[in-house]
Image (cartoon, rainbow, N blue to C red):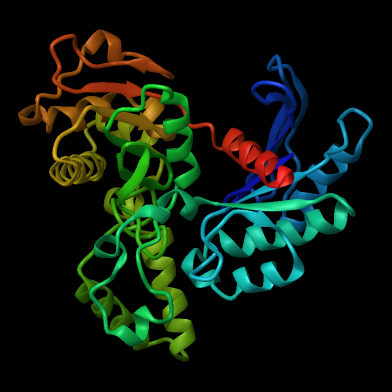
Length: 392
């Protein structure tokens, strides 16, 4: 069983492993945690919905209880192992491994490295251990894929005393990037760039199947603008906002929490558009002449094109560009706009091929670079890691 938690959701899936490729038996999700009307669904391997409900989800505990109760029922096979996605384990937990109480406590020490994700993931790990006694649980890190990045890439330009605390570039979305490389085998391009574009967005430069560089930094806040996050920003802007907040905050902790809310929940596409964090809403608004929505989307696609150009320089060329994630897979216009800014690199899209949702080659025949859309398979990567760890 795979458990993949987000800031307001829990996704899960059940696989059968053995000879050959793991087979997905069920998948589901609880979404809208913290609301009066969430969504809870489970599908079988043929896509048939076995559960389709709209329950109140006031707390994370209520949401996970729905998942646990369903998976304990006779309709689902009892798991023999459980894999958990973790954004970051901090500087001391950098490999995928079996979960112990001591490991959970160690990862919890560095919750500031992924503040929107780690507390939820930690809660679910503890609950999974309690709800499924005797079943081995394993943590699979998004940072693991980026472990080969050089010190030039990972070192932040800060005083050594903070670097010694583990402040460096870790990256995120590693399971997604790993799954793209996995799906491209056995012919993985030597020089590959993958753009994972969703509510959280990042880009990775990959050489010979190994992570060379990535846009997110210490936390998922870094890198490119995303739905509600700033991405990279002048540190002076943060100081300015912090000083304004500090004028009315009761103490330093409250000021820091309020600043975090600004840069992680109120910025990005939402902050610029003052309308929505959802690309679909923004595209619709652009169609009705909304100038702020257009500015937000242009900021998004312009930033991504710049990062891709930088990574082409770092890789010394480019063989393939892959779009993945919810926006990367489904927003035809974003892919076209990003690639239009990369024409000097010889990248050419075929408009008819690009008119697709899901896996496809979308570059023109005469394009110097192959451009593809490939959905991520993070759960499958977690299953593969768990199977490997069980065998060790």
